[in-house]
Amino acid sequence: MTDAADMSSDTPPSFRLLPGAPDSPVLLHVPHSSRGIPAGVRDGILLGDEELARELDHITDSHTAEIATVAAAAAGAAPWRFVNGLSRLVVDPERFPDEREEMLSVGMGAVYTRTTHREALRPAGFDPAPLLDRYFVPYARAMTEAVAERLAVAGRAVIVDVHSYPTEPLPYELHGDGPRPPVCLGTDPFHTPPALLDAAREAFGGFGGVGTDSPFAGTYVPLEYYGRDPRVSALMVEIRRDGYMSEPGGPAGPGVEALGRALAALVDAVAPAGERVRSA
Image 1 (cartoon, rainbow, N blue to C red):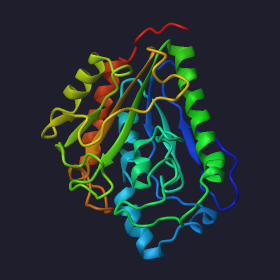
Image 2: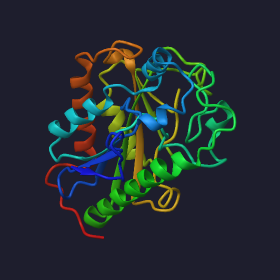
Image 3: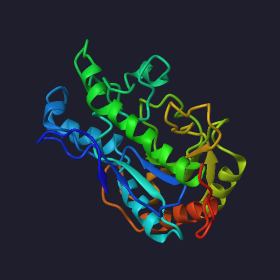
């Protein structure tokens, strides 16, 4: 396990790179599973403790790290896992850090200023730069390095983003009026090849329905590779929460195991155990 970042005593590990099979090209990315907020960051949040706990119930992709853990154990060749140790209320590592981010329109860019219900999360005029410098930039750099290592060893990298979403839309959602299938697959026209999408549809076909790009679309690729390197493929797996947990922020159910095994089937489909890989 690699803990990467300069952490003070009040800060949980910022992110972890958990090794898989040495030659596996697959990187399971789990960015939103944690509720951890360092004390210094908590001081800048306007919500009271009960309000904050409720917001974390809504915004956290609870138990997705456990789903990835099941997948890593069940896969024929274990994928690598990059797991965020902090809440997305600290920074959201998957947002664009600039004006390209459409979620800025609802106060949910790389540093959130509004809640899921569009209420104030941070004070007006809040400067996001210190949080970006301390948390966002090191995370992006480490994820870029993790992808570079898979490219160097395996000749390709397959990023599978592991997310969840609520059964009912929340006010912050910009595209919440579309279908909300049990499993939503987010795609990118450059980084999601048809074979990867087909493999995911087959792997998750037993959960009552698989949709594409609704209610959430797109994938996560480090900016150094985004739209530039076809050796980096990516897919977002969004799991509707009623399939594996008590909403909004309750305990996990038996769906975690089943979904983890489905995720393992996807891993095995795109990187079969025993596959001979080439060095870049």
